[in-house]
Image (cartoon, rainbow, N blue to C red):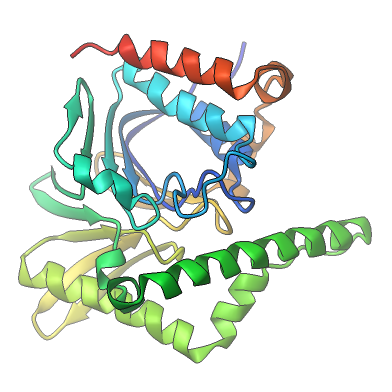
Length: 283
């Protein structure tokens, strides 16, 4: 008998980027199979519609979607908050079906405190004024991830430790460090002015959990990171928030994905099964 699933009050995932080469869908699927969340918040850039291509949509990516929709039949409430890579869904903000809803932001009341949750691309000047440049940057980022995957394959064969090229670029480029710092403080300033206790974002692929203090007050800033490089999420146990890291979760890593879910079923079959499952959700 398998290990009992870990119960979690709230799980926040962002920047999964399904449909791209850098997405760690199988690892995410293992994590999802290890938990039983009461509420799941998908905080933007879940499916990468900027770079979506029918030529690259692995079965593991569809299985992630299928597993998430399957949670609706197990009393999990799901909130899908839109991001920039899935901004096409913003026209559906306010849509509700049973325990599923789509929105651009949400405010939760947690033990008398208020948590303001949104993707965060609203703070990105590049997104606001030069969307074509941002898309070009996304393609470059995905290419870097591909190069990184090949480099790590070579390093693994040589028995050496893996590296993250994009992390090294971020850490070495002052403008990238400054951007992340500005992003965090902008989010904190607005949250403090609106008297929120928590501000929770994604977008910058930088997991974080820290208190930010300004002249106007203080707020706890959280970022769920991503499933491209960091493989992280945010978890709330009813009292405290923590950053979940897949690389530290030996149990999730040990979960095997049956070959029939990885190889034998084509996406058309999985999609039909997904639709049938979604239609069973009570309105």
